Image 1: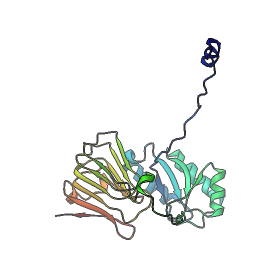
Image 2: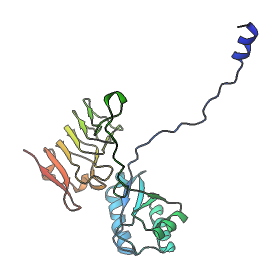
Image 3: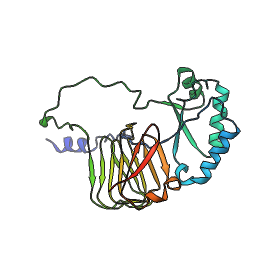
Length: 247
């Protein structure tokens, strides 16, 4: 190759992709009104909750859940609800369990429809992948053998999460399946993140800021004092988040 060819090649423009596409696991709060017309009592109860647990709502994305309010189809009524939530600094961005009419009304307010795990169709059965395919088999569990520090988020999106060590205040654990903590749990733990209501949380030393399974949660203020510092399990029973001592 001539010197001239080398010079031309070195001057060829370098193409740089101007963006990246990356997956992001997002933990959002779902607010489910219990009647079609949120009234003064609704907002009073909401304000009391916001004052009681401000750290839980601060900066958290929020989804409106229409499962219990099929009659809330009027655009002005939904707009009034969204505006009231946003005035309270709640970051409303989506709507779930919405009818076609509710989705249309929500979209006029800039809300996007959220498809929950319960609504997604089951994938068609596929033949089992061989080991040489490099495809993961079954749940993708994760085990962490070091303490989880404040500000850290540890995610096991498609399986169980096990922490062998402490979880500091301000840390966050998220799992599609169960969560096991062999040490003090002082941060947040959210199991069944894709809607698995059979998921459980196990903690050797309970002192959590927040516990959630399939979107139902307890904050530190609502945890029974008799359960604190004990070895416990947390599970759902008929839409109630229950806590039981072990051993």
